[in-house]
Image (cartoon, rainbow, N blue to C red; front, side, top):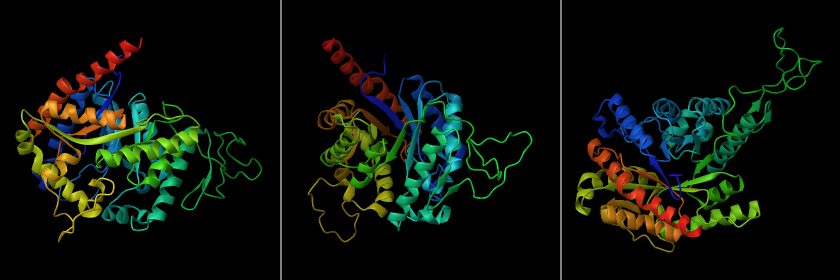
Length: 395
């Protein structure tokens, strides 16, 4: 099939820096990207969840609703969330919503999940998910996933945990049109013992799960729990260590030699133009703006190589400029340059799945579409053809 070898996804983080556009214009631009990618054999498209960004930096509060809109306008492309911040959601509600989306899209969902990184979001949506209390946030995340998996895979389920108990204790169920059944109730006392979500997912037991990860502990946890991972910022050398952590943990739990790169998707910021300078000129400043926004909370540690020391600067983001980032993790420039950087990711990490992001805050939409089209016409075929040639040789 055409989808041989490396997979390519479009990371479609919606932005409207300084709110220069009407919201529905942003939606039309996202639809254009999605429909183009669907018609041109991209494997997937991914949407993000953020709240309260009146500045316009990250403006999609509900990736599942956006996914439903895109599912209705596309036919083949898989539709992911990178990610639904499940610590902000009622677990039953999100289990149902993802199942409904799987039905609406005819089984095209990639369920990306995250814990949240911004305090302004967490405290105002679910104080239990406060990012300052990392241990509690993680326990909430873990319990939510446990409930999701039960709700999707069991006809009737129950759950008793630190944060949630389902069904609520001591609720009597007595309805003439719902015959008593010990599968979900105590026949004698009429107390409801289990719940069942409707609809079920099309994909069994549930859509593929992807966790957005940074720390080694999160990477190991995802591997042990049969969850794929999405990584984003680090350099190749740092990613190599993280890929190995995942590979080793997954190999151990599955008692087999897991290939490097299996179960991992990497996001890279990508902008193609006719020259290196043109790429910088059309999208460089916009990219830096976004990274400044994110690194205000995270600092620059994630951008460093192993054992690399951050020079002491007056402000933590003083090093942040185009040249600093470009050599570390940006697929910005000419077709040849971007192909060479992806080949490096393949040879060093055995990368199987790449998501690329081009609609940075403030970038001209035509320039963004041009970048995506160049990537589609010149970069993707290079890797698909290479895979076909390898398969041919092997046979």
